[in-house]
Length: 389
Ligand code: SF4
Image 1: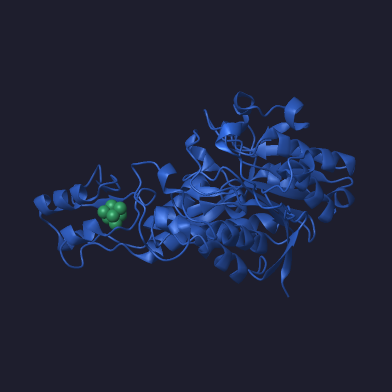
Image 2 (image 1 turned 135 degrees about the vertical axis):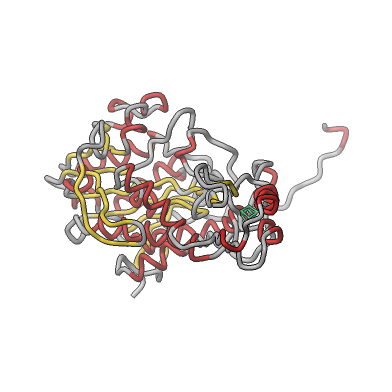
């Protein structure tokens, strides 16, 4: 059975406030019955508060509407993110006054407030889950949908997968990409050839190990799987393999399943706001030009369905190539526009496939547009004589 995803279209029929995204978000919160569900709950509003001079994280106008709905319903809201973002949040306009509630570091100011969970996956033995998310009784996953260098896309899953874990676990999630071997130094003992492999990468993604010059590392965040390095490597010495890219997304899905497992059924909602869709994530601490048109707001009780619907809607558009940073390379590959930007192995749908496999929801969904755009009827244009101009 498909899950319901409520949708707010960024397009307006008329130039009135009621048709803009903040007020469509109100309608979505009504449709989700948020006010009726939070009485007496400690509600963690998990979002990314950005860093440095980023200004495309979710604007306080949206956050405040969510917080107000929670307060109206008798819940106790707390906006939360990692300490490095919360402690500087006021520099980007997020204060208790603007959002309407406390803004607290998700694992405490020094990351000492966390719980450990055992769930072996590749290099990860145990996961350090942020205490505030573990102890909250209701979760609003309020995510900005945008690009991401490791997996091409970040939305509701990534906001929790990395946002609910302490920094050591976040690093370990990234390191899953290096777990499966891709460099076989015994097949390339020639220093000149290794230098050629490194220099073949125009993105600086291929580097030499600091302690072992015979060992090469791929910075997967910078790798768009163009294959130039493979042409410079001896047969079998180097693999650019889908498995290394997929592991990060599988780790993300596992992290989300652990975090959601701490909430009772019906105590979680997921909201993706796909506006100002930048090529990389909000961790970068700056805002580039949007590389895709705004796709709107997607929300529901099923994280898999919400993410799938967001990706489908974004994927209907073409990259705005003239907005892509010149250091990046748009490849003419099949698939989602984020794959054209970050490479074919960074399939943004992997995380929802893994999430569905873990029982977190279904990829089948029905969209309910909370305020469909109305066509505006007009008579054909007339002709104005040059003399009248
Ligand atoms: S595949 Fe392309 S981007 Fe990736 S490391 Fe090789 S040369 Fe660099």
